[in-house]
Length: 136
Image (cartoon, rainbow, N blue to C red; front, side):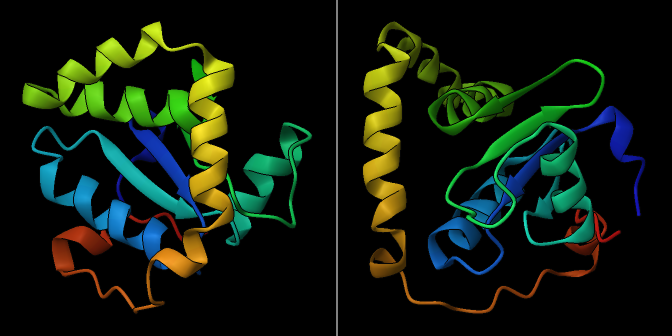
């Protein structure tokens, strides 16, 4: 396992097809090797949630955590991920003009229906990608 303390960690619902699609999407575009991933159901994910007093049974929120610096949730996490990926994705900065209440409402609508949006397919990471998953 790589040194996760210096990475941006994406916490996601490991049982969600939409979430797994986006994890793969980020993996393919992470040219600067900035991200690592942990499912919210994992011991590591549960510890992250518990330490912050966050919900530990419902996994409908994405979290982006930069250890010792910050964590972001929902639409703000997505915008930050896009910005960190760089290139054309940096245009996502425009999304910051949208009030958080509105962008999170859209996020919540998609999250509520995410199990209907994608079939539950199993993602099998390659050897390099396996190193980017925290399994503690």
